[in-house]
Each structure stands twice: as structure tokens, then as C-alpha cells.
Length: 130
Image 1 (cartoon, rainbow, N blue to C red):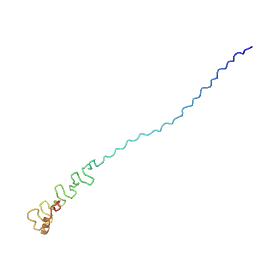
Image 2 (image 1 turned 180 degrees about the vertical axis):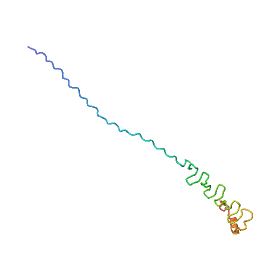
Image 3 (image 1 turned 90 degrees about the horizontal axis):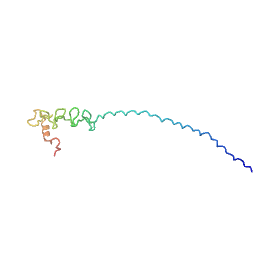
Image 4 (image 1 turned 90 degrees about the vertical axis):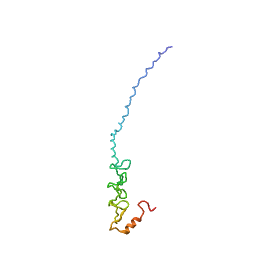
């Protein structure tokens, strides 16, 4: 009986190491330009209270109700006279109306007597006849 010597198996042949693939190339993120600073808003000419830097509202009246020329909404100045020099009751600085009627005392000689009587008979301004 002859025995054959055991056959040795050849060592496994090593295969080449796996080739590594290059990582995918990534594109660079788009560069954003820095945002320009927001332009400064011009200051509102009307402050929060509704008056401009000179103290007048959008209709041209100041905080006390007078316009740039010193007259209120009804046409009278701070002392109560209109642009023709008559007060709210119709008398000028000397106490006479346009028709010559006196506030107190005698009327002017050239006064319209009928107009004076009608002026004295009307109710005072603002009372509405009550």
C-alpha cells in the first residue's frame, strides 16, 4: 500500500487590493456677496405727535391752533382781531364797527343807525341765541 503524500494546497493567491475610487468632487457653494447695509431712512418730517420741526401740523397750524401768519382757523389773531383789525364781535381797536357803531357810548356821526340797532339786537357770538 502506498500512500501518497498529502497534497498541500497552494496558499490562496492574494488579489490586488481594491482600488479606491476618488471621492466625488464637490462644487464649492456659491459665494454670496455681503449684503449692502440698509440705507438709513430719512427722519419723518412729522414727529410722532404730528407736528413738523417748525411746530406746524399738516394743515399749517401750530399746537395752539394758529397758522404761520398768526391767525386761527376762523381768521383771528392771538389777540382776537381779524386781518382787517376787527374783533370777534365786529369792533375795531377803538371800539367801533365798520358801520360806525360804538361798543359803548355814542356812535360816530356818520354811523348807519339802522345797522347799529341790528348789530346791538343780535345775540353775542357763540351763544346761538339761547
